[in-house]
Image 1: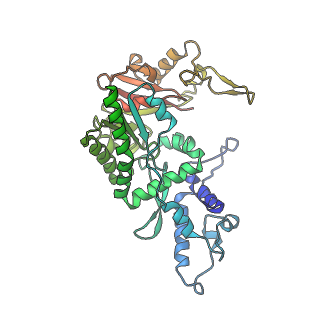
Image 2 (image 1 turned 180 degrees about the horizontal axis):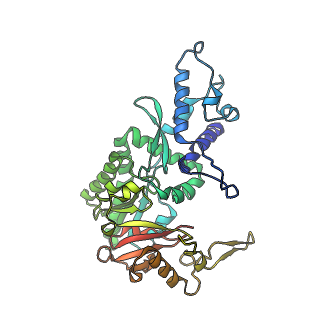
Image 3 (image 1 turned 90 degrees about the vertical axis):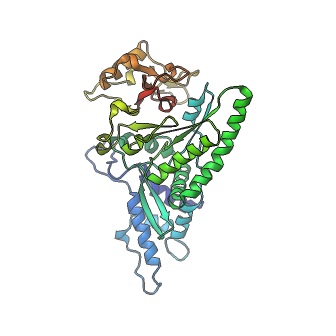
Length: 399
């Protein structure tokens, strides 16, 4: 990848993680209203250039500076030898086939620790993405989280793991582009990846006498933005089960219609950070869902930041948010902190305290449906509660 095209992609896709409906302001300037470059603006600009270049050189107008999303300096970075914006190079960057559809991130590894399962995960660009539509030759802005509401403000994929690495952004964009243009090939690539993993796990299980289950997490970023995408996820799960493999899928979603299609082989976690129109369609008393525990409650009281011991980085000489237990990878509570956190969550969310469990307190084997509610610690924790039907409410501590 050339440096100039890499710069263009990085500059353009910042907005994949900063939706234009959210004000992105500095803490020192809370009254400012700043918006990042949006994927829609990128799509419009690139399509204008495609159309302009389709006119003969002697008849077409010069590139209008005031109508584009880039300043002259930025445009100069991606000019070809003839002084034109190299749209084809940008298009090739997006349309290259992804190397893989699935990954295994550190959180999934924590989830599998001590269990006879193997979890893989896949995702799409969070909130928004860009594709090149091969049917009409146009760049298009795709809303990959159509049900998103308040969760946009604390989206893990926007502000955390995926926002830190340009390579991960590009990987997710290529997956989205393939899914948009060729969903059948997207399905085929998934099966090519997952069938060998399922075969290996089945052999391991046969030798050890234990069940080695393949667990598939869909949408660690993004959501089921179309019925076609959801149908592929269901089809993959069903086809692997029909082939005799022990498989379970799960996902978080902000769309009510997909929550109601969940079953024991495809577990859905509805996000309470969804748009109000989605929340109105869900009976939360009968639904497995996740909710966010903010650092400060609605009355301005601390919810959890004061309940963990603080760490210290000897190399930098600075304090860290949490002192991490080297054996568990989880933050250490102050004395009485674990009990106090349960009390605060119970009060804030009106749940019986005897239902609340930390994920490490859940029994090894699943219990009756919706018996527990689980608290996920702000760092180092697993995702096991989302995979289990005996957990109804999952409370995510966001630091």
